[in-house]
Length: 346
Image 1 (tube, rainbow, N blue to C red):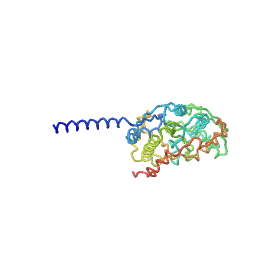
Image 2 (image 1 turned 120 degrees about the vertical axis):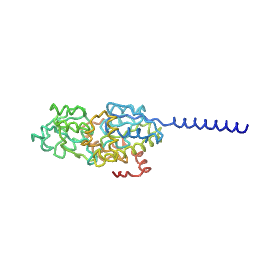
Image 3 (image 1 turned 60 degrees about the vertical axis):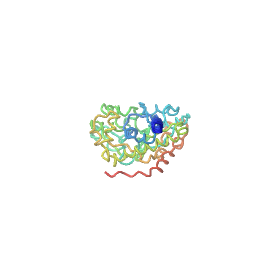
Image 4 (image 1 turned 180 degrees about the horizontal axis):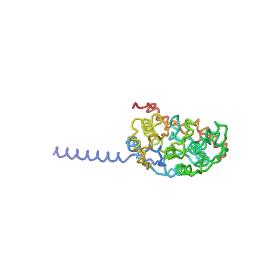
């Protein structure tokens, strides 16, 4: 009788533990993340594939958008928690309208050797000698993704080095992938475009990298948190940042020195190709990776310079400050917990 009772108690206890374990497994906090299906989204994919988010007790769902600005309203409304956005005039205008979103970490920047958004010039113009210096771009047609973009601020920054202003060139608004065709037809003479379009344009013989590292450390792409995520799920938001930075460090190991040939690069390239639709692995031999700060730091100095550009050119609906849209506390807490990034030894 004692043995039977003991056996029953043991079985009941085992079942209880099993149910408890199942309950724990189902208790992962869900986080919805907006992405653009671009190369820099690889950090999110690495975090999922390698169990980094899971180790933080998170279940991450990636929601695709065809542009960063389309994430802003869902972020403000709490329909998604995290977004992959841009440091643009639209970010400040959204804040001015009362949409509660914050820049919390770097997602795409241009430290030296990581200029994934160089100034490209049509190859024919360079080969003919018509364009030898930045000053030769005066009056020419420049491709831009739209008014108030960070790339426009970069163009102004580069033009200023030659004594030109942003208004000294003609701006044609056209998306990055379409800029290759525009170079081919001669519809544009120059553009600050992004990888992999840069390498594709070079390989196709239609454009050349004319100015590289023309605006070091510009904060181009950013990680955004919605206001509800910050205010109502702060612990979850912190754990997300912890995982994000860990994944960013894997990316940094793989892209040491501004090339896709660091530690674990082959596997990172496979992830990028699988998640972006890129088919040509040869691109990565000359493609320049974007920077992602391995400690999650945001370059607020460049954001302040770009904000001045947005203000001077009338892109803002009302006066703004960088501090209106930035919250560095999550990345700072992660840095305290993990310590500074130490580059991998290949």
